[in-house]
Image 1 (cartoon, one colour):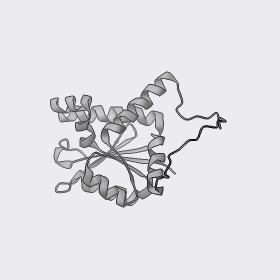
Image 2 (cartoon, rainbow, N blue to C red):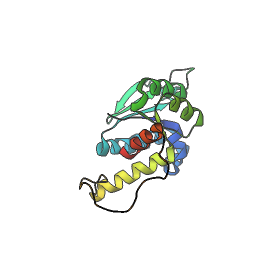
Image 3 (cartoon, helix red, strand yellow):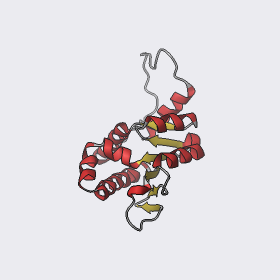
Image 4 (spheres, rainbow, N blue to C red):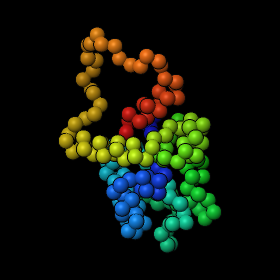
Length: 173
């Protein structure tokens, strides 16, 4: 199953320390820095990535949909928020979607549709870790097989099916 990462663009930019500084200087700088960061991540992890921005802050004469360096960019229509676009996309994708946002309204809406969520700061941390491990030449996935041990593993209580699926998606990041 391929993973489709749907990102609340301005939420991620404004939750990030480095991107928010650029955003305060110029909103376009913040968007470009985010897209460069996601393009580098896409080279490492080949997931489908869509970033959704509010159309009210869209660049003049911009298209509503665009693709830069393999990352799809969507601006909401006038009178429509990016939150609405994200909810519609998550409803369409369902289990394939992983939504990146710290907005509780979005999180509650998309989890009810079957999509998984991750907070913006945690996603930024996962991107940084993937870039670091790629630069060091370390593969995070253990391909060596089973390692024999007598130590018990796992939680004392099994997570729900939805939580287990969500954890699997986040591990793929």
